[in-house]
Every structure is written in C-alpha cells, then in structure tokens.
Amino acid sequence: KDSSIVIEEKLSKAIKPYNKVESKEDFLMPIQKILPIQNKGIVLIGKVESGIVKAKEKLSVVCFKGIHEVIVKSIEKNKIQISEAAQGEYIGIMIDSLQKEKFKSGQVIATPGLIEPHTQFKCELYIYTKAEGGSGTLKYLHNGAKLSFDFWTTKIRGEISISKSVKKVNPGESLELF
Image (cartoon, rainbow, N blue to C red):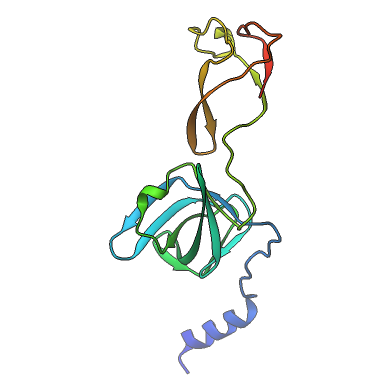
C-alpha cells in the first residue's frame, strides 16, 4: 500500500468527524442583498442570526406588506454549495422565484410563523445633542415629524406620534413614541 494512503487512513480514524451544531432556535436571517439568477431563481444573501437552515426547507420571507412562503432550493457559502448553514455564517439562499420585485434588502427570511410584518411600533427615543454626536440641525421634535428608522439592514421613513401632553422634545431628552 502507498504510504500516503496509510497515513490518510490513520488520520481519518484518529480525527473525530465534524458535527454540525445542533440548534433548537428558529431560523432567522436579515436579507442584505438580492441576486436574480436567470432561469434559476433568486439568491437571498445575508448572515444567519439564529438557528439552522437546510436545503429543501420551507421558510417565510417577511416583507413590509405581507409574507411569502418559499422553498430553499440550495444554500451557498463562499461559492460552495452546502447542505445546511448555522448561526453566524454568511450565506446565499437560492429560492424558486422569478419575481425579484417582491423582495428587498432589509426584509427577513425565517422559520414560518416566527415573525409577523408590522407597520407600527412603540419605543423609547433619545435625541442626541450635537456634543453627543447628533446632527446639530434638529432644534426639537413635534407630533407628526418624519424620521428615518434603522432596522437591521434597512432604513424606513416614518411619522412619529407623541403624547398630546408633550408639545415638543429637545435634543438631550427622551420620550416614548407610539
């Protein structure tokens, strides 16, 4: 027998096989980029936030105006096709769709039922002063002001609603928005 084959056999017996991390978490990945592949489908690119995704799995793409059910045709990492991907990996998921306009950066692909789309939210907002890194051009906020909100990989323009008891909010102050 060739000595390199003997060494390879001994090494393969000595080294424990690589096992994928088991995850009980649901799959979640923000979509950072969308690539249409002619006559094949669309590749949704992003970093896996939680869980594991496998080829042939049914997932939901949570869009701003609804949810689209999709089937994972294949998964790629570093231009190599893989059977599954776990949290922390930067991957491309090929789905069987030719309607690129349905999907946008900032949406998420997840285990069905994990996330619902929202058009409103409640939060506490702090307005930075110029010394803290704020724009310096904002004098105050008022009810109905239009702001940009950053969520993961997307920026959304929205209108704020402030409690009627509050007339205006100055930089350096916080308030609850609803």
